Image (tube, rainbow, N blue to C red):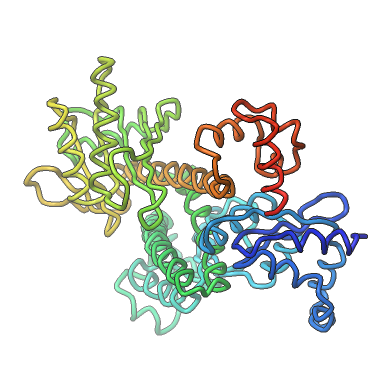
Length: 490
């Protein structure tokens, strides 16, 4: 059982500032993570007598409060920071009561099982550990159902539990009612032709998922700006889950003659489509990641013979300016990458792929002009319609969604996007953890760095004694005592 007087004493010392709180049980396990506009007001609400009426009506809240033996807090500078940190900590620790609350309302997923002879697009709310391919989760169920209906008309696929009928000649009749007249595709289809339809529909749904992800991010930011933090938190959870699903998306693996092309065939197909002198055995792709102009970073991934070569991945922080300018950021990181290779007399890749449209491609080309060296082949891959952009007068190229060369470019681009987002999230988390030290007068960047090098976390520093802090380079007994008192008051 918790000690009410000890907990109340902790609450009295909390600041009236935004942050995140972590409720722990008697074994020190984190059982709930929450965010707060005011840590003092929010955390104190858990231990007020007026809470009793609410908890009688909500057994889960009552059980949570009864298990609280201690708590930790992390102070941040703003409510949006608290929102993002809360989500990251929930993903990291998977607290029991956060999971219970979110499990009560699951969002829709789309499931496609490649083991079926005629795979169907089904709606589900539970993602199982099987070989099926999942898309989502999707917060807007009405929009999702309309999109699936559109896909059925556009690609001639099966939805939910519709059962096709096998005809004597080995083909399949997809529908046996008036719906057959509504679709432009032939209803009698071979297994191989239907599999191609499924691949095209999956590629389309993956593209839609990315469009919806950008929309959800914008809605989350707008909700946070309006201080609608419960709505923003709900959208944040969907954004995190959708990002994770997209990062794990893979093409179907199967042994029939219509399986996706191997890397050699994909490279040759890409060579032909782009008019290259040879197959692009080495490719590098750049992506810029930021949140409203803050935490701007870039990633570069390297593929060799159509496969990721992670030893050659690179991450960049933007150094030449502060703000939101994707073009300047792209010019900077492309210039830094190939200036380094030129100085080390290392070969450039056969193909450079830029995640973006004509502006981003122009920025990359400008970097090579500044280097005064001949660039390798450069293209952009614009998200809208997966359009290939050239740096010269050639018109943009739209390859079929089942084109093996395009699918290879998509894998390259998606890997760059994943790598950039991971780096962005790491920097955000580190900055949020460090932000509490910014408010102590006299604690400059050098001493902050020394503290963070000596202690693995702010929480470890918070529990350290004055004598231990005084051992850090740049700290004496006086400053160590000031820092200890400051942290105990937060």
